Image (cartoon, rainbow, N blue to C red; front, top):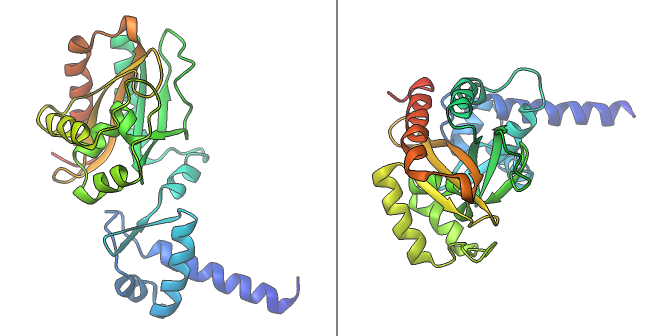
Length: 251
């Protein structure tokens, strides 16, 4: 590589690093002007680089503000030290696994999908349960519906406008029906999926809330349809989600 090329590469890397480091630990969104001020870079430079980072999912853009993107989190899962969310969740997930014998998932919302960031397998193998990093349409899973119920209206609208894909005969594909279910979930903090994502898969989920009622993640217990006692599992799953909400700072 020529010296000029190397200098240019380092310069771009420095700018990207400055943009990432401008975000604080609270994860608040930043407008381009504020991001440029914190990164000590020209606004035009930040705007151009941010557009590329959004395209690669390293940043997310919502309501005119920029946020650190899910791809950074996914890459972070490959390092030896787990992220704070997983670190706080895993003990509770293990307790859920021991109490129920079922598979336990931790999921986050990424655009119109849910992404699994932690999975503890149950006693009975589930071939339909994806590994860490796998994603599903949010409207088709209990975890996704738990997150959507506490998300901003614009987030739900994006899911609906993106098309409510039918994965099974039970998938909710009608906007009005989905809206009604999300209203119920906001009241109970319990979301249920009955073979909506995959045949013979039933799950119960509850949202993990940050400051106020901001959805951070969802904890879900999943199992085969013939072995899931939803009425029995729901309070246990909700208690785990509330406990995790407290651990990460809400409460």
